[in-house]
Length: 147
Image 1 (cartoon, rainbow, N blue to C red):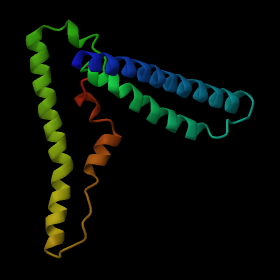
Image 2: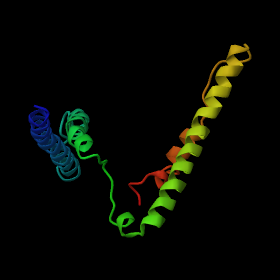
Image 3: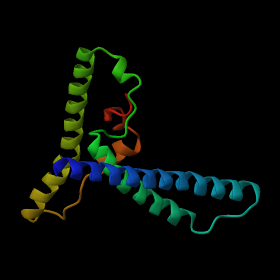
């Protein structure tokens, strides 16, 4: 009984994956039409941003089921898989420590502002430092997808 349920789940997730891929294709086509129309013909595709936003939500939601079944995430491993296993482990440990540091950097100022607010000193206002760091692209090397 469980194997039949797994087969059904895998089959449905496969169909949902195709719907997600179609949504990603729709993003590319709508963006292409909008940009080419704007640059060459002085014509914009009305609702292009809305179509792209909805397609992004559909693409992520429908492809997510198959990603969970395959126990994968969207990442590029062309360089990472070629490294020896020990080097992969060292890099993963470094990445996890950097992620922990980024998490502390984001959460600590917010928590300190909340505690000072409880004492009635000032209004709670999260620090802008994490957002400045993310705007400059600093967290990008923390992602395994870069490796």
